[in-house]
Image 1 (spheres, chains in turn green, red):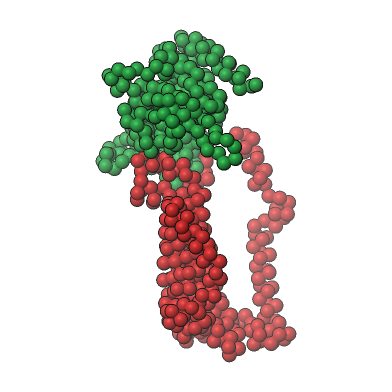
Image 2 (spheres, chains in turn blue, yellow):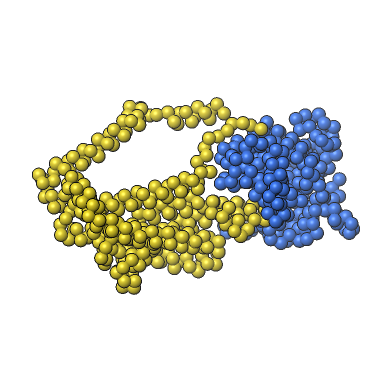
Length: 275
Length: 278
């Protein structure tokens, strides 16, 4: 079950299937006050094209750091990250990033935000408008095109933030606990919408969360990380069929099994954290 | 949700004292104070205090009308206005531009920051005589002083904005492949615009001070010259006329800046929230 994570295949044709290959990556932060902080240690992870991977772990385990390394916001301390076969070195403009807070540009309207990443060289004016309208509709924000982010509710800005990353069609979307601060109902609605959008677009998604149910409900595979220094403890396949019904995910076949396995691993992890 | 609403109501609920006055009451009291002040001034002048020391509202009003009717004051006001109209925008743009450049380039900032801070330590109006020596007693020496006073305030505010700015916006834009012109004008300037406008608006009175100080030192025309000349021959009413003109200039410039600011920052003022979930 964990073969893909732990034993990266060496054959050449397989190589192309992987959008992201994280090879022996460690990250150490230099802190002025204390000794060096080891955030990640020898992470190995492969993500296939079109896959929905979630990363769970206790807070402070470096899961956000892993995303930032893939996006190129931070540089690795050891190892390397291959993106579509090329080593990530500096900002990786082929990924979309959905940060923890929505971080919509507050001075731009919803439609300007969603269209922000659309390069005028790649998209003509009518193309751009079509693309923006399509994604605004997907996010259920039709009618709010001219609104500023300050006028939107939390859930609405979240959706706008997600489609902003999707609209310019990067091959991979990285999401850093995007639904963290939302209330339970809004969360479920957004999870449902995210899956619907993803089923249409099939972009590769790496989704960081600390919510085990969310991790299982959304993912093809769940990556479990340990407490600091973050290592990959296990990778769990979630062989549930799609499309999934988020609102009754507990009743779907395969959920309990996957959740049970995840919980078993995690329980162990929590015990370590408590000592 | 209900909690939030009730909290807001509590916060907005007028306190007893405020309720007693109301907004009409506040305006009335303010008006009464102003009228009282001017009446007292009018009354005191010539009765308890020599008119050449404090003049009086009626004398000032007459001088104001006469001054503009003769055409003298138009000329003086125009000269001062031109000095500000050149020095202020050039100083503001230079300050904002340099503040931006320092914020973008760590090397530039590291080299020049201590120098700028040291220069900022100079009381800048003390440089006015030097500007007269360098640039003559005409227009350009005053433009120089206005520039100097405007420049530093705008520089420091913009530079502070650059350092306080949420770097994540720039990172996100970069990740979306946005750079160059679009990054500067669609991300960075909007992000720092509250700071930029603070710089512009605080520097307006200083621009006027710069022009006046320049004219005090050496000039043949301008409102500053007019004030100094009038004071020299004890035409106190004219001194106050000059002061009123300067006050009006500052108010007009500030109003213009406020209108531009309100338009540019209208995304900030959109506080009408919609409460539609999902």
